[in-house]
Image (spheres, helix red, strand yellow):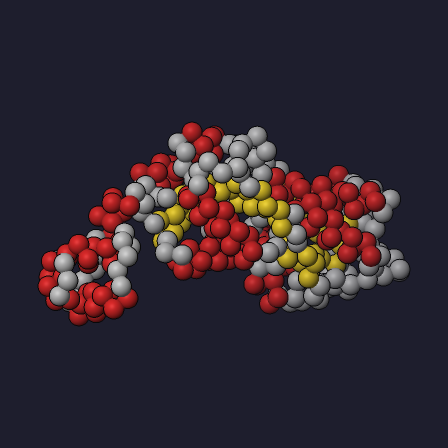
Length: 344
């Protein structure tokens, strides 16, 4: 294995100069830097990352805790974070909790033991135990896509309430009066905010928020399929559905086909997230676009800033969402509405 002394001899400089080039600890002229780097390439020298981290007090690794890495929304946000982190000189360790509080706690221990420089955290639910531990341990942490008002932490969110309003207003503008909503788990605040936006838009249009038209899924396609089959089999079924994420909306598309309904002719549908797959469904999905890349970049920016200055005041960013209209929404027909019982 090549040593610093061998690199120094090959480059015709001192070992200290090689060390300064590697660690950036002192000014070295560009000409000498190039001599050292050329020697490192020719001798295939690779600096010891662990030794460098011990000297600098940083490992240049970040932890990212996600509740469901199989969900394309989190996969796409995580991908944007990983690319930007790599360009900034950091590696990212991804941990998937699978919405399990015990795994969440275990992964925090794992990342702490690996001495990551900071963590990006998307909580499993509304419990804040894990975050309180991170605050106590003074580990730089940024929370994404979850809101914990009682904790002094950096937060990056998208405006879920606005998204619920936009989706429902769009369906109302098309003439729909019976609009179903498939919300996510009630313990996750983005889901509850989307539902609140849906109810607000109905109330503003003088339409009733009816309990039988609101059901909870789990953000996976099967739950969208199951809940929409129940909803659409009611005698006075909805003519439109707002699904609080695109995966559940895809489940609704399947259920509608099985019940003999055409989307958008018989049923209008709006999803949420605008994952890449949303434009490839049949018909392409009208949805609420979350600014996934902007969320990822803002989260990383907050974290790198927190790593540099742990005494700075916590920052909070709420990014706007937007409506993307595609082929899954049609205007409400003024003829007799579909009665789900006929197809159930």
